[in-house]
Image (cartoon, one colour):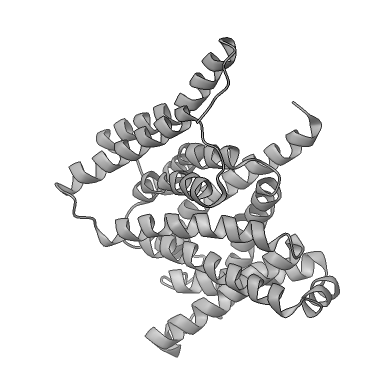
Length: 316
């Protein structure tokens, strides 16, 4: 493996692990923080996490990479690039909001399984918009994963009726793909540091304004307590800034298929964290579905091996 490829792959692994930690850590903070005496029960609400967590992430990025450098670059952007940056930041705001809201209604295990459509939607849109070639074995693998997860949902709900939390996760898959594509476009026009600062700052402002409009100022009554901010600084540093930094550094270089495969192996890591931090154990049917997902994930690798052994290229 070339040295130029090793570093992006290492960044992809680190980003995948840190993003996988996020849902379990978030649910732990929102549901059990009071038991550990960290903050008053209910202070770590999803709205507080979205507002304070993203604000801390923006502030940490600004401090870590230098306010003068980032603000000077921001001031020098053209109106077109600024609008592109703003649009990208707004799109990237929706994905975590949908996931966090879904976590209020369904388990981390459910979110993990339904999020397997992230990679499928990402690759489908990449093929449709950018004509990125996809091997037949990859298509077969994604079909196996999609059918397996779909069968689980239909069996558990006794029909095609989806629960609100499930709809939220499925809707988030589109915004996950749009976030990745928008990020690739805007990073051609600005630095990674500015993108991370602006993305997180805009997210914090959007979440604050929306919650203020729908729930009123009292909704943030405990958002400004010292305990919340201390916990959010730690959360933002690990599960937001570091995760985004490693992930984007990797996805700027690596192929679409590699990024999609990282999304497919993400459930194993996420379920490990859900078990360790929350004690969530998948049901028998969910274990079977994860086995199907694993099979669909490995199918392209085995097919690629056989094709190389036979001297045949992997064609669409």
